[in-house]
Amino acid sequence: MIYGAIKFSLGGSLKLAFRPWVEGLENIPVDGPAILASNHLSFSDSFFLPAVLDRKVTFVAKAEYFTSPGVKGRLTAAFFKGVGQLPVDRSGARGAAEAAIKAGIEVVERGGLFGIYPEGTRSPDGRLYRGKPGGLGRVALATGAPVIPIAMIDTEKVQPPGKVVPKLIRPGIRIGKPLDFSRYHGMEEDRYILRSVTDEVMYEIMKLSGQEYVDIYATVAKRQAAEAEKAAKAAAKADKADKAHQHGGSSSSDGDRDRPAA
Image (cartoon, rainbow, N blue to C red):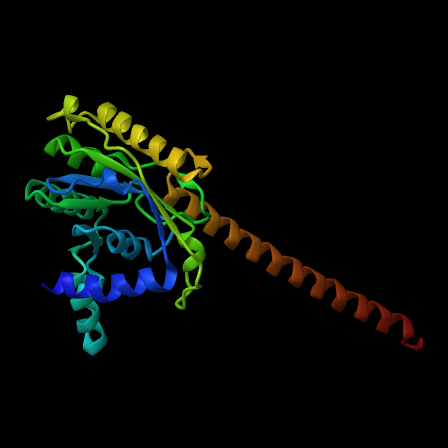
């Protein structure tokens, strides 16, 4: 009920304001379970995709969205519940991963659509990063559900990271043909199979999106970028201090030369 109301109001508003284009909508099953594996460019991805589909899509979201205090916190929690998000505590990496996998399996086993971002986080620069095998692979192999690759196009231009007010840019969504991994059913503990399944899905997403592929995790890229920025700031600070020291030393020397002899 709540999902339908929010989808009607928010989804309708998004489609009216941004006019997202869609290719491959026929690849989404009319009923029955499926896993929607998408690239992740923007916070708005989780809203644009459900807006163009007739069926409910369930994603997982960090638990903080559901537990923040005050009126704003309660409204935020109600909103995320209403749009089909499931809370996952990310305070412990291993526990969060297990909770997300369990939630995904439950959604699929109920015959629903489970949405997942194999990269694990938003792309820091618009490129496509290596998929994490645990979540996607384990849900797919434990349930035998088809995996549908999806490419979000230009959503990072609609709402760049850190920006609250979106730009009226028309995004797109390409939906690929379902991938069948039922031949690996029950092999969700085999890390080589998980890696192979994830890489196959990421390859299909790359073809759909046209993104440059980077064979490292997005979390690693973000950490490297943060470390590089920190090092650059430290170097700039040291350079500034060195120049200030040199200027001060130069002034002292000039003063000594100008002082008359006793």
